Figure 1: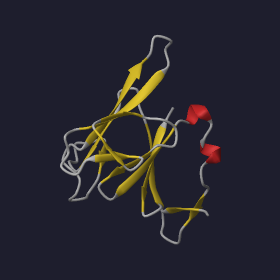
Figure 2: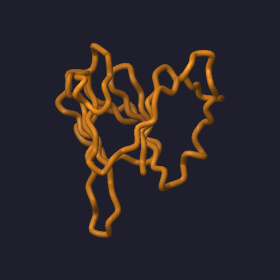
Figure 3: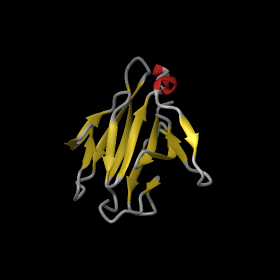
Figure 4: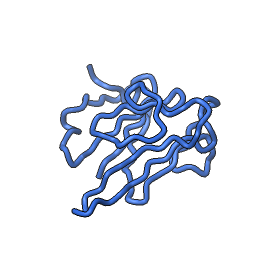
Length: 124
């Protein structure tokens, strides 16, 4: 199952598996991923899942006409088909889309624990 890894200033905050129902991202606590950031719209973006005829799933990120846009690979988008290793920016939070089916998790940077409980940092 693909995931998006949530980061802020290169610190790993969370890993969100993408369910077949998709998910929403925004400043409202009603979203699947809540971002407490004034630069993020209440309903900022959503990830939708579409099933192809062969049964495989593809994932799209859709900007919900947010004030400050959704960026994928440093480009503002309205809708974007997600590919392995895509970098997503919403407000001050960065995400990385990782397709675990492509076994790319092993190729990503390793994590190490920081001195803060529950916080992981990217190893260089």
